[in-house]
Image (cartoon, rainbow, N blue to C red):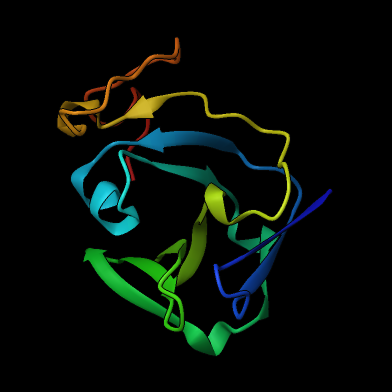
Length: 135
């Protein structure tokens, strides 16, 4: 199975082979600010699953944490992926052009979620990282 995604203006596009390792909703302040939303939904992949189809030269990174770059299209500003030490490991699920077939499994960093947003689903919630997962 191959999934494709793109930014708002379409200049940046990518392909993922296989499926996500998992998908989750992050409520940390950095995700909220970089997405301008109550949370960001991330799909975690292996770096060898990812390839740019177009616009890689338009992708700009911002180092939000040591070794982690939040990458976006310089033309339209859409957040697209995160890299860790230079390799893509997370994809912004909202940039997919179709259905991945995967659904979020959890909410993380709910300890810093937007006070005006109420989580109304039954997914597990974690104050920070889920048990056993560290970046």
